[in-house]
Picture 1 (cartoon, rainbow, N blue to C red):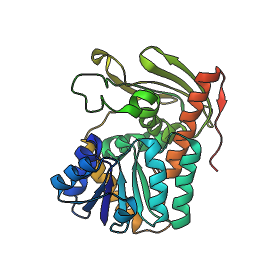
Picture 2: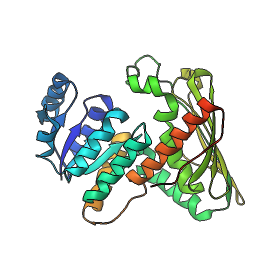
Picture 3: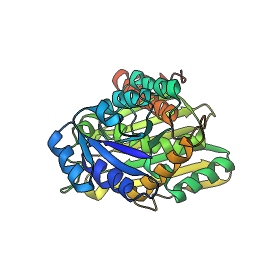
Picture 4: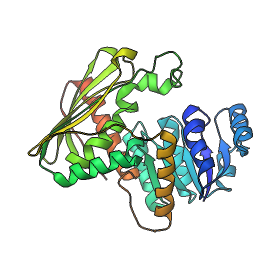
Length: 302
């Protein structure tokens, strides 16, 4: 499968391009970026063709890997899908429900294979633990705490404008939801508060009756960096592991799964754009709850 890379930043080069360049059944052939000079540098590093126009790139590839800010990713993903290109996208899918739904609509129109890279969901240790928890059942509560430190000297994301604007809710919130939803099921109500250090504190009522909580920030002091994922149920307390492999290895696994989807028309994936759009709805509801001081009901998928 011939891939085009949309994006030229740290995540695009050090994770996506690196994984694609090493993959035995994928060929990274093209790159596009908002800054032509950066696109040229990526092209030279990986032996690619840099394109100034998206449509020219799309004409040369079977699939696109996207590592762009979410408000830029969504319209380009929809455009690529309508051009018949398979999608390997990043989280969050978008910053608005409408943009997320447009990507979903585009994939349904053309039937292209699609995945969103919720990193730990492509880690075999995490995936196995989530599957076991889902099969066990009987969970009445869950929690994810994820405190990142984007302002640490040397952080590759310190200059990421969209992350500073949207905070941990949108940056690491998708990772938290990608762990909670498979085990506890869809969310119907959201209550959220904003805390110090741009921390989002979110309560989620699931259709199953379970209630989960998320505490999220990317602006924690380095000494307060923290991750924890726990479920509480009839069988006791279950603490799920963090990641066991590198992001590059996980992305390689995502490429494998996209290739398999492309060979099975009509097949779906638990981390497809439909799931990613539901994550966007929940995060949008959390923002609305913070701003209004009310509990927000999450609309079902269209």
